[in-house]
Length: 435
Image (cartoon, rainbow, N blue to C red; front, top):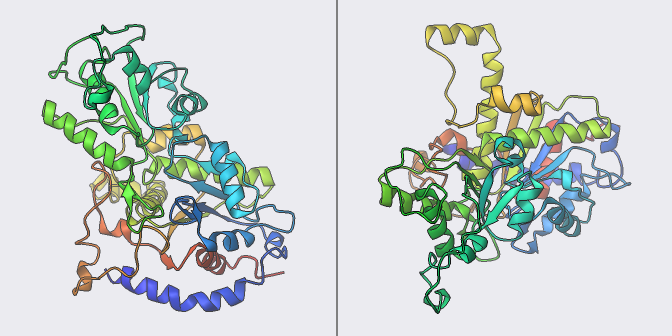
């Protein structure tokens, strides 16, 4: 794909001139004189920070996004696949890193859309991950929650991989927990072997750990998963395992034992369409709260990962395109004749009938992807001799249930860093240049 190679060159050559045109805006208040018709979706890891280390360009970028009073001049939402803390804690961390006030309503964790899955909120749910998983589950609406540690305490003979953690004396199950009715995967756990073992146990006993495996079950308990990132960028030179890697392990163990594919009731976090639909809802809410009357027509998603940030933004852009097409008489005619519009990635959730009724129809008509070079994406990687193989030959790091489409990993633009990305967007929108 020539776009991936050439876009970086075009972007890099234009960064200097863009900086000169936009840098003077800063906190002078020029941007506040125009009403935004676009919103910004920021990834965090690899865009604003690497591990706990802030990326220098991040603070410069956000000085351009607030006025003299510290108020944002455009609606901004942070869309992260992280899920090991509450939104308020993440907002506090971002406020400290960026030097501008961030509210929890501007933060979208990978688990945020779980608020919409109300039919599971009163069920007895097993949650997997790290951090305050019980608090996180209750914060998004679940009322009857059990953790992996609670299961392990009630059934001490199930976790046997680590010899040092095996019970010293024979013990019987302490059966004081109700049957598990669903499983929610928040993020990568600390002890993978324990979580893999007990989740498999729950799935193969239909939620009753006092029973033996039932490998002939026609279907397993509902399974909802957040954060499909195979890898993510921290301080190390190379990307680290993410929750997507844990999910690969779980899926393969389940299939090896049963001969069947593990099924998900829903997949949340980037690149899921549902995640971007929810993020746009937060953008609209923010614009309404600020009294901006212009509808938000464009979204810009800034990220460092082709397989999640870019894929997800482009997938949502395709959804928006298809949604508009379906509303036209031409689309109806195409459907009648069997032509139709290109099919998007299959989803368990019917976006039009389900989430639009919950979140209202999107006002955006486009979602443009901006790739930055400060995280997972490496602009200096060795390119194939045949440029047409650049992306087509790339190993797909996305989740099993998302098919690889080369068009979905082509960014709209490539920028050196998040500061250059903000300047580029202002330039594209002609925002803040007129007094």
